[in-house]
Length: 354
Image (cartoon, rainbow, N blue to C red; front, side, top):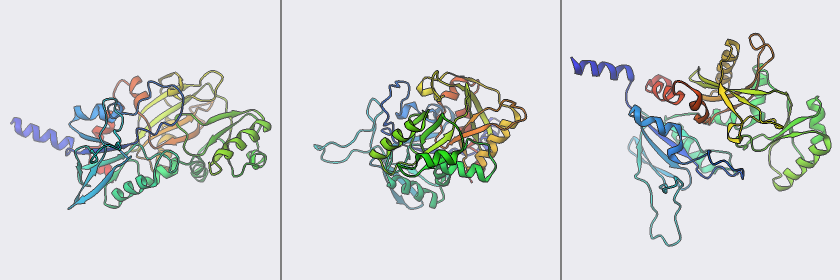
């Protein structure tokens, strides 16, 4: 009788699975002090919660990573991590390269989670993207897909998607040349202040600036493009607010939401920069819009950032952006039930892997 009951539980839970969590511990190139923002293997929420659910999880750094095919399986080779959870890179006096034990995976039992793909030529290498693409071509479930990541990694492309699907969002214009600031501002058809940001590659609010005048806009754009003439820059309509909302959507369901208060004398609300957060109950309209946006951007797991409307029950919020590599640390701290465990438990259902 006990064996039958165990079998019943396993059927309800689903078959065991593994996760290959692919990261880049050196991705945080910013120079702000943030001791709480760690990037080592033991700091990832998926690592913290997988063991208690019986999920085997492998963490590998993209730097130096390579894979090889073995029959219908694939082996991932990755450099080890040191005691401080940072990648151990080879040294000149090593006779041979040191790797972690190869991680064996197959499309039938392994989920690929690329968390460190970053932006090509800024915080990543094109080879990493191609490695993940190879996994997709072999039928692996990659969360999130490269298509979704490509959309979310460009704030201007996300904006164009929003326009296509009538998502309410701040007006946005690209600045395509160091002398194009005035033209972009005129097309934006708004007043100062405006928000200036990189269209791709920003990290937790770094690279987002309030601009108060045309003189400042010209000067900042010229300086940015002097050091990187290919940096994609956008300006956005500034919508004043005391707080924004981060909504976590997984597989078309809301698994958490929080209010993030805007930092004093700033336009940013990133928790890692010191903004305060608290649990938040979103309206039915906000919830349905968050789920619709996740569907539009094809994100299986997404962090969607809103500025709330004045009449939240009847008026759509402004969607700022969609995060395809959303961190779950903040939402974990304020949630009664673990959002990470909700995701990991749901993934026992192979139907989600499609």
